[in-house]
Length: 143
Length: 340
Image (cartoon, rainbow over all chains, first blue to last red; front, side, top):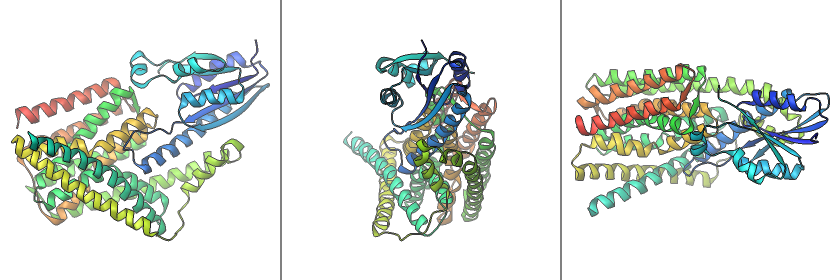
């Protein structure tokens, strides 16, 4: 089955590894790839307004760099790339965009250790349970 | 018992007042600076450099004016040890990986180490006097100038490389426009009465909050029968460093590693150069022998330690975090139960 509209989301880490695997899979497909980066805007209590602004600005610029990188990586004769930069909680935004854009495949990385998953949580785990479409998790590993 | 409960409550409330007041004060001060036409880069660098460290500075100032300078020195040295071994230790242990960049570490790491050495050199003179204060403030001025210069260079690079490329993209046009706006110099505008009032509210809150903080610290030390220096080194140092903990941990969790480590190193430089430098202009700051022979060397040791740990791969791992935390616990046990 060839998917018509794919949503690829990344926070930047392991993008090379992820893009390589995705391109091996979709290189010959006639498909639209939506690259998504979510600027996480939540901050702990007592974070100063200036720091919040600074974090948002830094993350927005990081997101733009990642989207440009994605555009370079997801190039193919029949692949149309569309970058999207959103703000909010990553898992919620990913699911929302998948619904809004009517994608039929959602691709993201996974590979946190058990300790990291316990301490930091896992976006992919949350998305898997609420995604409106098929989800492909690419196993990534730390350098 | 009631005395302890009341003073702990005053300590906790005053900490919240101090942290929120510092936030309000810096925000409105930046607005006043912008109205005077000061470039947004200079304002941004200064605000982020002093923002999280105002509680330490305020406490050191108030402690000096209320004739408890040792509590002020304790807050500064204690905060610097806690910032590196405690906060970076907690962050690296929790997040698992905190990256750094060579340029940031070379600049901020070297300056942090040099400022710690300058402080110890002045401590050897027996007390930190007006002359030492002037030197410290001048050194901080030079550091701030380097920061502004680097930030300008970085903004120019970003402007040409990334933002303009994405300005053409419809989906990102709004954010790009905002970013472009941020790197331009701010235009002068009138200062509103509201801004002036909030600046004064922030400043008043900071002074009142720090006064209460130092008062409760001294009271608790008296009740517990421990030197006020100990209250400064631990309770007040950890309390006034809550903003650093919040910024360092949350930015590392978001992958903003430069902000995470940079915030700690910048804060430590500010704490020494301004947190001790400015009070020294008003009064000679006495040096406690144990501070010179133990606390200050530990501060230098943990600074060196974190720089060496980062140098290995431009990152702090979970193991490094545990090493740092263990060092802090070891220091606290020695200082509280063996040397005290």
